[in-house]
Length: 116
Image (cartoon, rainbow, N blue to C red; front, side):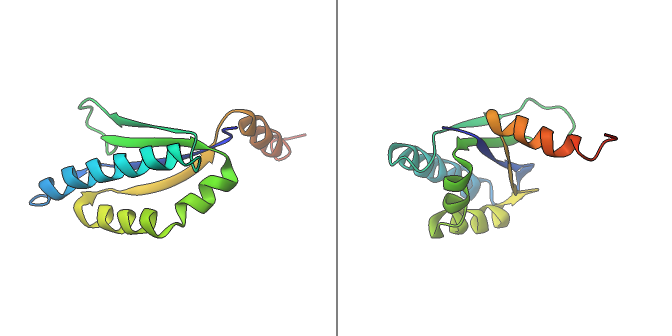
């Protein structure tokens, strides 16, 4: 059951590396689809944002069990794609987070610190 997420975001391709970024997007999409079929992740959504003047222009949202996502994030293929993305995409980053029932758990932990 999904209780964790990975948000894998970027600003834009590095000038001169646009084709590499497009090829990487296609390979990563296939990798995520295979990982979903193998049960490593529950699902994923690629998102391209409209122009808005901000630093985040696209991302993948990957949902799954937080422990499985941690393992997934450390797979050689994932790390290799992240290294390549850092080379051909400006503002590339990977951020873990909570989803579903895990949000309530995190809020309960947070509430301990906000004036009991």
